[in-house]
Length: 72
Image (cartoon, rainbow, N blue to C red; front, side, top):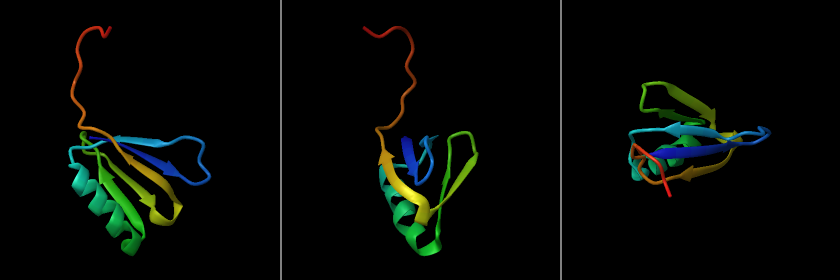
C-alpha cells in the first residue's frame, strides 16, 4: 500500500510503501492525534515518524503490485 504524507512547511511529500491495509493506516492516523506521533513501518522494515500536529494530509493509495514490462 502506497501512503503519501504531506508535512507542513516541507516542500516534498513523504512516500511510504507499507504492508498495512488501508484500514490500518486510517487507524494509525486517527490514533496519532492522541499520541502526538504518526508512526508507520514500510515494507523493508524502516520506520517513519511524523509529528501529528505537522500533518497536512495523508493520501492512501491502492495496494501496490509489482509491475514488469512496458506499459502502453
